[in-house]
Image (cartoon, rainbow, N blue to C red; front, side):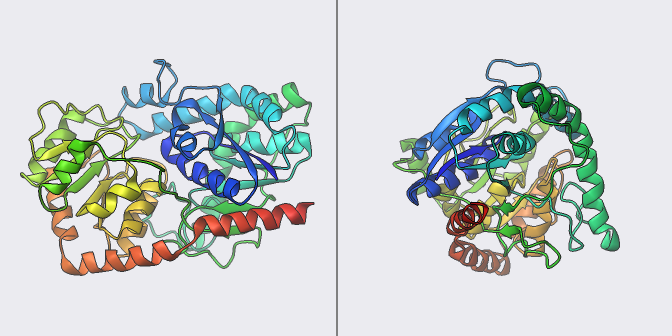
Length: 412
């Protein structure tokens, strides 16, 4: 099959889809991945055909509407969410045109992320089967509340309603621009209701989050979508640091920002108290020039290679990093900022491999000290090792490839 895969988000959102494309290619299919230019590095390393979508989520060109621009000027997570909606609305027509051009000869379209509704529109216009892809659950259920809501709250009977309410709010945010693009680009009628009858595959672990019994058969939970980066060699300085002492603590928040960089740096220095650590600055804007010699500053480093060599992972709780840390068999200390991050932090805490999360807006040195004390407990480390063994036995990519082939065949 020729398969067009469409998404829009940060590097962490795109990397699992790059792995899925590589697995589909290996199974004899031909894929092309459409995403933001700054997020396609892992796909190219895996030999996946790519095309850059319009937009500049990372602000490489100092784009005023980019997430990097917004989070660098605001400490409110809602600002980033509104910026993401604005990016999708501003580029809906351009993304639809690009997808129609790319998928004209495709047999199947896979759609995810901010470009998900555009992918569904392209499939409708081209009369191609379409599957949705997700890294966190959006399908209504009684088992848990919508992942963007506080996981500690006692929702119970309101769980299923919470999904409909939040999905409805998001749909109303995207609908006007999407309907304009549908009419302008391919003459499709306006939609009043959010599309929901297409199959969906989720790329997260059924061990960390079991599939709810009340989900329809069209929804499958596959397991994490990840592949080792080929021919990756660590820089000599990193190798020397790892060899020079016991496993270090990893600290990195990926594409998160919008917090007090000076306070975060102080929390790291005082909280680590001389302990060996690896720090990935990402979009944090932390000044690394005066960090102590016990902290080694990293560039982009494959998590599957690095995390098993660490004592624990301090991270923001994105789906990909959460799964990579759990898969590595090491404890986590989760510092969530927005979106589904508190949800995954709660799942790790329920598994007994992370302490209760402290939000990025409040995280300080004392929180890091308490988190490290928790992660150093022998019982916690044993639970983390056991969880890692289970996750490594899951074949998320194999499950997804088989499901895609099966559902494409059923669709004719």
